Amino acid sequence: MSATLCDTGRNDKGYSDIWTENCRAVSLGVSYWHGIPSFAPIVEQTMSAAELPAREAMEFDVVIVGAGPAGLAAAIKLKQIAPDISVVVVEKGSEVGAHILSGAVIDPIGLDRLLPEWRNDEAPLRTPVSSDRFYVLGPSGAVRLPNFAMPPLMSNHGNFIVSLGDVCRYLAQKAEALGVEIYPGFAAAELLFEGDAVAGVATGDMGIGRNGEQKSGFTRGMELRAKYTLLAEGARGSLSKQLIARFGLAQDRQPQKYGIGLKELWQVAPENFQSGLVQHTMGWPLGNSVGGGSFLYHFGDHLVSVGFVVHLNYDNPYLSPFEEFQRFKTHPLVRNTFAGGKRICYGARALTEGGWQSVPKLVFPGGALIGCAAGFMNVPRIKGSHNATLSGMLAAQSVAAALGAGRAHDELLDYEAAWRRSPIGHDLWRVRNAKPLWSKLGTLAGVALGAFDMWTNTLGFSLIGTLSHGKPDFASLKPAAKCRPIAYPKPDGKLTFDRLSSVYLSNTNHEEDQPAHLVVRDLALQKSSEHDVYAGPSARYCPAGVYEWVEEAGNPRYVINAQNCVHCKTCDIKDPNQNINWVPPEGGGGPNYPNM
Ligand SMILES: Cc1cc2nc3c(=O)[nH]c(=O)nc-3n(C[C@H](O)[C@H](O)[C@H](O)COP(=O)(O)OP(=O)(O)OC[C@H]3O[C@@H](n4cnc5c(N)ncnc54)[C@H](O)[C@@H]3O)c2cc1C
Ligand code: SF4
Image 1: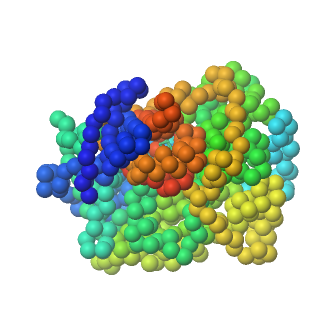
Image 2: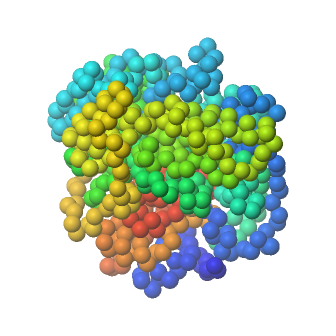
Image 3: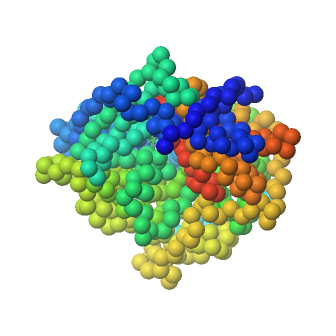
């Protein structure tokens, strides 16, 4: 498909206007402004492959996309099994850990199996959980649930409070010591095929301008060809999404469900610090019909990770997960924790919530999905890093066996067959009804019944079988006319903040002059539906203030401040028409989380 690109100058934020196929929206009085992004679709529209220099290719046994716990565990395990296997990991963050955002309380089951020596190393798991509390909040009070009432699988005894970014940096060192090649700053932008089999990935071209032109520093992407490709992109991976659709991997499965998790890292005053404290809440400020809750973890040198998760099947388009998070911090149970402290980092990331019922078929010719790209997050435990690690190891065993047998580019069927009987399956099976019950019955009844079902499953049976999830999250919004607007308090700049000062703390940076990475497929639809019917929820669900509808003389313009994008992927999930496609920007762009 060819389309016109027309640079229409700069907007009032200094970003360039770029028109893709959406130019026709001009006639509807809609402007479409991008600060930045993607290239695959735009490049395809502006240059034929013949005009581009050929890509250099490198051959590996295994290419891994994503240096999170899943990708790095797979890389380490492969080298442990067979040191001669050549393994490369590509990571879109500027360094390993730059795009990792998690709670995180980690269950060391994965790490214990992967690197049993970690407990004798200088590993960044230094704060064991010492106290585990769970509360239900009302507007001004809190009820603590007794620990004995919680199913044993919810206990955090023996777990560690960490920065998952730092754990990934540690894993990357281990992988490199074993001979794994890691390329941070390179986004896997395209899948390569041989026949119908995946045969590796191509990294994105660097140095393409916003209109698709080659700039002075233009560098063609690299083809990383492999016998097997493991996708470890985390929740809502952009290549994983393409593969799931192409190979029908989600057929006969429940739709994947998601949440958005927002997090701040605080350095707190010594008198407010309780090393090892893990505290979770549900209830206020969310109403009974909106799923989610908070986490608060004390670790390291007077650090507190505070975060808030909102399930993305909420129905009121006026809801703002960011403002709910800010409001939560004002609750009397937690507000004193931050008195005299300093907020040092902010970020957000989607997480998968569908669990057992939603895990797609994991394998396709030439590779497999691992970690949260496959949806191995355990929602009630708010934990996925252990399963990410375990799934990376399981897939690595399957790949190593296949390579040892001289195979290539086929399906790793033993990995597919193994996961439900593995500790990952055991972990997800027992909690499979927690999320559907919460969605169907609301927080109080849903969580109570969910806990009962987790208890019975722990004892080996369930009275309710396996519940379905229903609609995908993008289909859950109600028209704005049927919903009540929500008035959020103004930030005070001490405990509560606005989006822009928050994004500043994520150290987000993108090359400004590059094609759009937030691709609105049909801008006219965005106006007629997202704006006119749903009152522009993107302006509220985006945790980085990327989307704005600016009213000018009754003429709404869609402003996309792509420069601010923290790569959480929520727009790709929650847009009511699935009209926004997130694709990787130039490698190295995005947040630079130091220790999230
Ligand atoms: C707010 C929040 C709190 C959480 N709390 C906990 C907790 O307390 N305990 C716990 O165990 N789990 C927790 N989780 C879940 C946990 O973070 C995930 O399960 C885990 O990070 C998944 O690991 P992964 O390797 O599959 O993906 P990720 O950790 O998401 O890593 C994926 C990596 O791939 C890179 N990538 C993606 N696409 C590309 C591409 N196309 N090219 C190159 N690189 C790419 C990304 O930049 C990233 O570095 C939490 C998650 C969130 C969001
Ligand atoms: S633009 Fe999309 S991916 Fe980027 S921060 Fe906003 S919601 Fe997240």
